[in-house]
Length: 634
View (cartoon, rainbow, N blue to C red):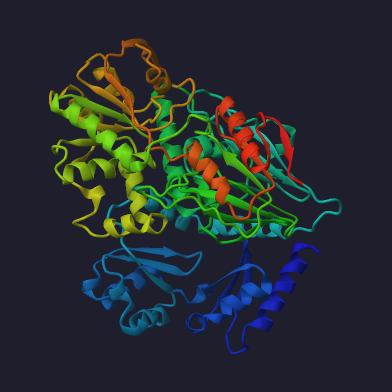
């Protein structure tokens, strides 16, 4: 059955299910979604069972949207809404999405927009034609989110064309022949960095992650015949926004990929932020970046965001569901249902199976699961990390010693994830008086990443979500935190005699503003260098961590050799990766148990050691493939 015939069948079934008194003006197909446009949007909204009936009958994701002809001009609508919304709501912003007919109203007190029994909200919807959606305003403004929303609004016609093309590709006729499912390792196997995997079925080619190696210039194996031509790839799924998983995604668009990218909403925003920052860092080192900002904008147009546990078709024979991975904001485990139950495989990406200061532990319950691709960053038999509580205590003792002696503390961090956790610990130590209140400077993209965290509270654990919306209790707004916004301010901090703490990117000391502080403070034994995250093989951070007393840095000004006299300490327990115990516990609690586990994202010996231990304890077939190997799931 061709796509047009399938679409016509869906249209007929939709009109059969929807009561005749409800007007349907059009039925369109955008990516994996069936979109029903209506001039009776308010009546559809009142009948909550219709969408459930449609989803069950069509076996598709369904959205009801106001007919575009009913949408009044956004400027006029904003004016009317401001007149009707009570001042007590304290509205901060409006976001108009012409794709969906939704106007999001950000407010300090969004419940005031709803009104008694929802009457005020319903009245506004009827009067302006838009679907008015009140949400709580993020306590910190994010420029990235505003820019992404603005670009999508500006390019809505181009995006509509893209989504219709995706819908046709998903609905294309299927092929005859035997079903199969296999994975090719394109990067990130028996190593940490340049993560990329190709999932192939009889019908589909799906790329999971597309990362760079932060400690080298190596890319995934893009020249493999399996991914040629690049336009044959049906979809890209990004598990999370760290650059070793998404840093080279814009390269695909630069060289002709024009298909969809699936990830969570915060992953979309965070990866755009980090990719743009990566271009700046590369240019600062007088190197040529592998892509430009225009490629990132093209990427944004092709992203189809998915919330956790929302199943969607992404090709003729594959359905995708994203689950919480517990690693960073929006990080996900990608679960694929292949061939309507033929095989089910989950790719964990990076996971943390422990409740942290930011997130709930990684999901371990699935409806069906036959195979799993599991990370092993800390999969070695001796990779046992302290608890978050013990890590907090260790950090306290180090910071207490350093600040008492008037020293400076430099903490290399990733802007996303570890930065926010370290901020929470330091804020609590100073707020409770255990540490004196000295400035804590945030350099790099840390502040912007923190703003994005506050914009997506539903992805945080419930305790932190409550805190960030209480202005007087929001730990991220503590006066101890000072944002470094200029190179002049950075230079002033570097030469100041006063004690301070600096959290700065990049987390592995492979470049970025952290190196400016390191150059100034490295030869002073009164200062401290505190590692809180993974340092990859070959990175400057790994060299220092291993006790190298002298390091040579390379930049646009030439080579610079520095003696390392700083006190160097590593505080384990802040990692967003599961340690050996947590990985084994994760396997032991999986429901259902997979029959095959593929190990990746770890150094050579750790991958093979974890694979062996899982087989010995659980009698599950395991394999730790090398890059370029292909593993058949079924």
